[in-house]
Image (cartoon, one colour):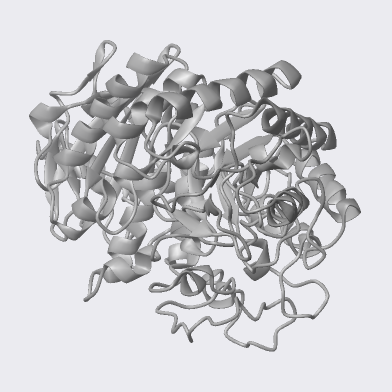
Length: 552
């Protein structure tokens, strides 16, 4: 952690410093001497929409009743791990938002095929469990959003079962009558097998199911379907949820951006009328240029896929496939792009999620741990609402089929430890690369403690989440990237060395207000090795894979 001493580092001797000045050497302010100070900086967590979210796959998180399946009571039992509600402690992770992957009744382990949009899956517990979790989260300042899969339902949902039964009852050449069965217009039925359509067993009809035959696509242009989802949204908002993660928004009407934006605008307007402070974040798995127009709908956030996954901006920079400067350039480019569609947008950066291989698998060799840390820092220090997938703070592994990406949270190496989940059916054996939480929590240089430190920096400096980014291209290069962030009347500077070699960064060319960056105080540093950042009067010598945060 940056607020603790690194191995082999010694406090700068005051006498030696004086002697150095007398000898006219460039004074060195070892950032290690600042670590104790930054560790005591107060948190400045603002109660607004800007959050650090933790994505939880309940099935694999923590099992409270010993059946091998994670549950809501398990999440409740582990809230102290996420945020104990006490800003004076530093034993929790420090997140202040939770995204719960689907918790509604379903026939699958992943639960994206919804059977009932207004209930809790029995594997996860009861509605009372959900309400208790919400209450405890809110008591700790944690906002909770839930996954809402509006694009499709389960094929066993009563709506679809009614429509299918009705179509099976019709004579071969008869046309369906919505007055007899309104549910035939809840889905997309056709006598032709179009792209993404599958046969309806026992009939000559086909229905749209872009993801899977057991996930029939809903007709969100139908006013009756919209009334259903308005009721569903109101139900959960009245329960106290703080918003929704909207699944697969680009498939609402496959291949039709204009209609998708209109559907999002309808849902946004309804939700905001019920709960103006609620938060909507959308999954639109495309590049930023393609999903940016979706911001016109008014939704708060679109997940930032450009920076995510093994081929995203972050992994490309950390692996050396792209230079460090490309990170700063991409931040500014997106900022201008998104604001052009909605000036009130809130970016939603993430590094990995439940559909992607975990980031520890992106890197190999002697620097892989440092690179795993650095990738997390580049994500957690982005503007907007940053999302952290459960277990990434431990460097968990998991790739290949989806089940492997949703392996049990690595609380302990002992699989008999109470609370350890069995994992999804058909999951392969996932060999972890780094230690479990038990070991990492005791190691100040672990990935876990590094991620905690990055989140703490985020919580200490509101500019990190809320600031407008400026990229200092004149002092950035393949090894280093320098950006500043301005929020209200404050500005901070972030310096990154994303390479395996030390690098010197000129600070006298970066001006903040009436000061150069060389005159600013150290607000924090993130280190992946034993060496700290050294500052001269005009520059910072950055060790490999390091971050320096400066401000007034």
